[in-house]
Every structure is written in structure tokens, then in C-alpha cells.
Image (cartoon, rainbow, N blue to C red; front, side):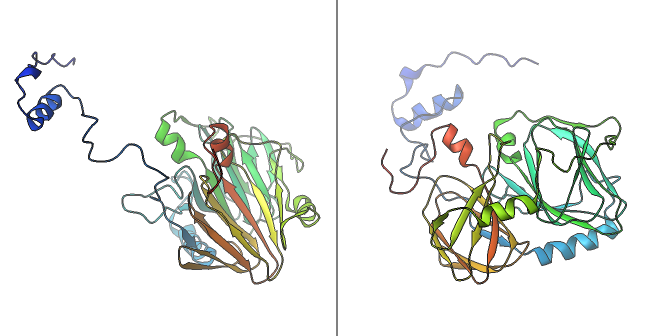
Length: 324
């Protein structure tokens, strides 16, 4: 029902600022000279914090959930790595969420599509385990990185006796903030597919990108980097990194939000006086505007997912100390 218009307000009657502020409240306006919270500030606020989650914990919890949570009623059997800040129960960093997911042998997770872009890295695959993207069956083997661009139907199923584990990344926090969220379940529950495509452009196979990464040029002593694509997603990228045993890599503050996943190896990430000792399958959140360093105890391979493409497209990407 339309709200009635408010009565005319006599602003000339205000004899002091409190009285003027009260009149502004009456007409649903806010003053811009005494804001309780500044709308502009000299550098990014560090609201989200660095965090570390262990795969061994997530795997054990998901294995237990396999007895208790059925895919027939849960959209996905997954664990969300919500950044540990007050009031947050979803986003891992400001624009991205990372979640561990599992399917049991001979199980399926129904097909759906949505506005958020998504990708996943397989931690434990199995023969005859697939994701179906727009009607095409794509193998899910350990180390594989798979894309599901926004609007693409995607579901998962296994014809194996083994459980499968992976990490999903979505830009859902960004979509939630901006508003254009759409979600739709496939009419067939699990989209039908007979065609298997191991060379789908939606799949970056571990057996393909690992040798290319090892042969790539160093970006720092003992550190190599390979950006995967095309295809690309406009809101976040995927970069695989190799650090030789003993390598030390110091990274400046930037406006990009980043999530790291350990593909293989062990090491430590240091940030803000904290040490995250990581191993294969772990996830590390490094929000924007934190300086950090990474040390590899063994030969290590990491996947870095970040919103740098989005920040660059909007001309908001900055590195600490760079001129503007």
C-alpha cells in the first residue's frame, strides 16, 4: 500500500543542529557533515581477516555428513569456509566463497544453474566420477580444475565405489551484494548426458597444467606461476604456483581478495604476526590489503583464486606503494 506523503516541514524553525537533524530524519534524509561512519577513507578497511582451514578437518566432517545428509534433500553436501568475523556466515573473502564438497560412491548431486560464476578443484577424484556442464560429462580427477560459468547447468555424479572430494569457489558474495541473483534447478534433476569430453574447455587437467607450470619462467627465486585460461571468468581468475623446497616469497598488499588451496606439498604462510602451517588440501583466505609471505618446506603447488580481474576491469586494482 502506498505510504502517505509527510506533512510539509519548516526547516527555518530549526534553531540549532540537533533540531535540524531531527527535521532531516522526519523527511528520511541524512546529513553529510556529521556522519557517524566516514564514507570515504584513506585506504581499504581490513574487515575480513586472514584465515586457515585444514582439509583433514573438512574431510572428516564431510565423511560423517555422508551418513547424515542426503543429496536428495540437500542442494549440496558442502562445508562453507566463512571468514571468522562477527556477523558473517558465508563469504570467505569479501567477493568470494570457498567450500569443501563431497559425493559418495554411486551418488549424484542434482543439476542447477545460477548467476554466480563457479569453479572447483578436485582433491580426491575417482574413475568414472564426473561433473556435467551443459550436458557434457567431464572427468573429475585429483588436481583437475573445472569451470562452470554463470548460467551453465551443472551437476555431479559418481559411478565409482569411492568418495569424491573437492573445493568449490563462487563469486556468490559479490552477486548477493549487487543483487542480480537467479537460481534454477534442472527439470530432469540430474541433466542427462551420454557424451564424455576429457578435453572440454571447462577442464584444466592436472596432467596438462602441472608440466607446463614446472617449465614456466620464475617470477621470484624458486617460484613459478601459470595463469589458466582461456576460457576465463570476468570476476575471478585461477593461477597455479610452484614453490621449490626452501623458496621464500614475499607478497605486497594489493586490493585483490585471494583464496589459496594447497594442491600438493607443505609450507607456512605468515601474515600479520600469524603463521598458517599448511599441507595438501588446506585452504587459506588472504583478504585485500594484507602483506604476506609464503615459505615452502617441500616442493609445493598452490592454486590462487582472486578477484583481480574484476578489480582491474573496474580500475580499482592497486599494489601498495604504486603511483596513481
